[in-house]
Length: 115
Image 1 (cartoon, rainbow, N blue to C red):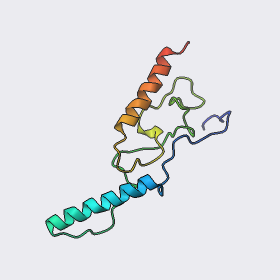
Image 2: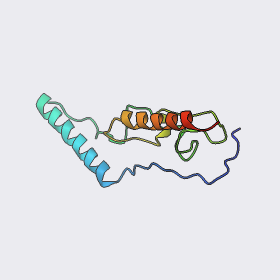
Image 3: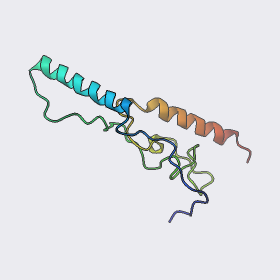
Image 4: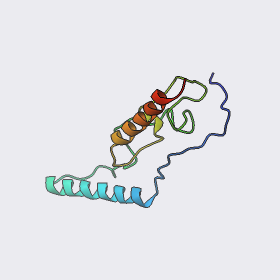
């Protein structure tokens, strides 16, 4: 059982699936599939799912399980520094730089804190 959190939890990262940017990404993905199908004489079996990511994300989301530095709430020396912090798909964007930046930020805070 996890200890009770002392403050309200807030989701800090949010990528709405119907945002203008995500809609543009979905259109670009479908257009690319159409170009590939046209060039190869194939057909698209099903519409591409732009909300899918090949990068596993979520599980210990910032604001729900961890604070903004990846520290698991209620555990002083337990930090999450991987894609688990991100709540969901980044659509067509590889999340590696975001993950690396969050990890570096977390470790900078951890290494430079006083006792």
